[in-house]
Image (cartoon, rainbow, N blue to C red; front, side, top):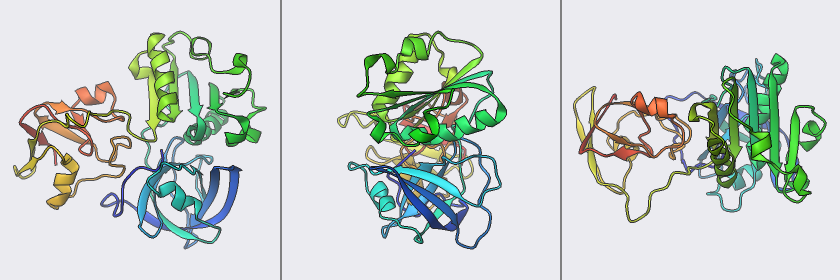
Length: 330
């Protein structure tokens, strides 16, 4: 997860720590790897593979989300992040690439909606910088002696991070666009037919993720077996159809708040001083999730499963309402 458009302050009530860049290296010409340690010398939070942290960086105090790619068995004295310098970003990746050893920044406690699920077999598909959470997963699965295969796709070997750590691993297959076609990703062979004992994990740029997830669906894989984490929202609404305005009612107070067409539920709640959690602002991290008590949501997120939506969960930062009033458990 990377370079989301949140600006500080970040999620209310989040645990934060001042950290120092204790080491920086270049994995590729565009990917920098940062080792972070607490400024006070203390322990960092424990986390499970697939987790990410909010990072507050730059003079504008931009808050961005980056996956933790180090070993996920704690306790931790250091965290490792790998960040792509994305020219089309909103400034977060450039601010990160301006950091040098000895610089300080703030990070929040890790969160995880992309963890390893109970399964006998695991298929991991990484595209480009999407290797970051899946690298941590692979290391955890190695430690467990689990059955898995990691497929790592990149435009070229020169643009792929951590190749030296992965190319001789028996459970890793590398796929480069500039290499012969026989080594490129083949969904029919590499994803294969659905198996009830297998979980599939996908992370990377939007086009890559859509290709892998779409191929899996075409092969008959159920949505419940497909686990994803996106760097940015893929669900878009045409600019000439932003959705109707509606009203949010809070169960705790019964207060009503009109939500106009050009504002999100989260924007309105924050403007009225409601202590609603949030982070990415795009419907991809899950920090803002609340429960709907009445009304019909118009889901526009990329984080909730069909089962979670059916259970009444809702993302105020990106989703809207199909009914005049939407009651939220806040």
